[in-house]
Length: 66
Image (cartoon, rainbow, N blue to C red; front, side, top):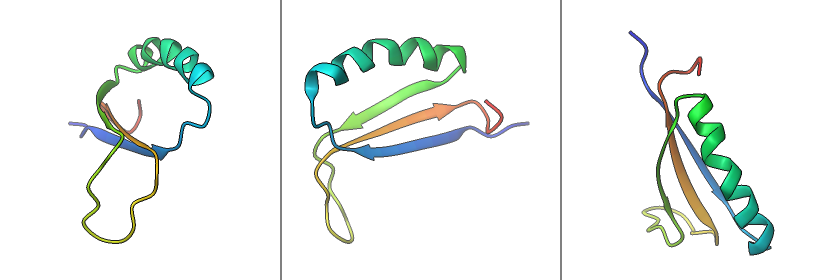
């Protein structure tokens, strides 16, 4: 049985208008791979080290193969 895989990305949006366009196409792509958008946060609490500006996104895939 395959285990789910979580993709974590942290990035900075420097130009919101093109990013909004990107977001519109993002969810159909996830659907193709049976992925689930779990959450995003623009102000995460860092427990160790320094916090960098930006957004953190977490996506779950059914398996590594997906």
